[in-house]
Image (cartoon, rainbow, N blue to C red; front, side, top):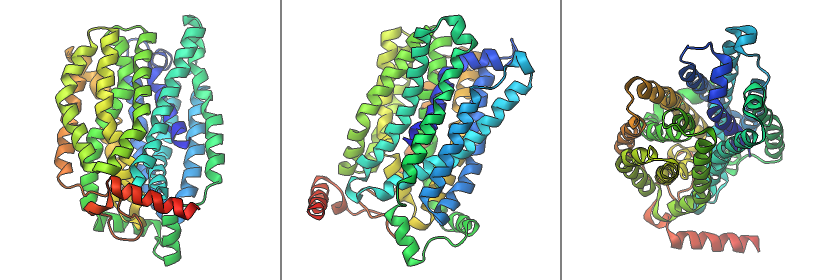
Length: 437
């Protein structure tokens, strides 16, 4: 629920970019590019959020940080809905929009790493992939909800009503979502792994010292994770954030057709997430990432060409790329937190993920827009996804398998062959059932 709130904002912003472009920037100023660039602004703040929230999460606990990030995010998103336009206050309008995007990025810097760490540390070791995949169910759920709300408003309201004030309404939904998420999080205990650290006296005694220890002692997993974060984010923000405007302005789809294409793809992806997460518990995380990297590298160009052939083919092309992306997306919460020991896990995830997301996630949409607009090469987003996959393929040679491994303690987790697979899952399931009885 909390993660859905966090990513609902990105979903809404992505599908109302044409309205934001017309209201927050002067005419003839490459408004669509600047709107996407303002999406990237929030990513500038994400590393700062990671450097602040991550060490605090290792010092104070996962729960307290997550409570703060969700309320900050929901308030900032809601305020976008009441901002004055460029016609009303001139350049103050984009300035205020930029400030709120920065606040959102700062909160997201702690939200995603904290949520992934929280779920990974609560999940049974042998089923961490399946349980952790529901975090991404929330991510796609937030994106999809943003798409559904805007699509419903476009069907209910006239074009002039939507352009005048209807585009503001989706942002107001963030506040009740945030309050519900805050209530749910306040009812949870901190993770058993963090509680064990505190009892053993191994939690960080200083957030700053924990950050120094992370960078000094764990630079190898930081670099490995960086190589995986690059393709993950290029694919994510090319497919889910840039695609609505791309289909509408570059392939000349109607607004409703472009939103329907994205929505159908997102629902298919959400349906498959738990199954792919569960599959990673059986065959391991590394194999899932190999399948995704090679599949996207081979199929990106053909599928982007297919999307230019019409509405039905666009759905097919987007769905295929979405399916190939799922093996990465479904295993984030199981793969990345397990790359670091418990006492630097929150910081390791938050810092690494947000630093490289700021460079390759937030910039994906404006880079794609700038190159496609300048060259007319409509398949460039596919080439950019392929470029990202090269980093991921290189990083996979250094990724340790952690399926089924315990996340307790101050050593970097690494699984043995007997730790995962159908037999290991069945044994843990029986043990949990006996404990329940």
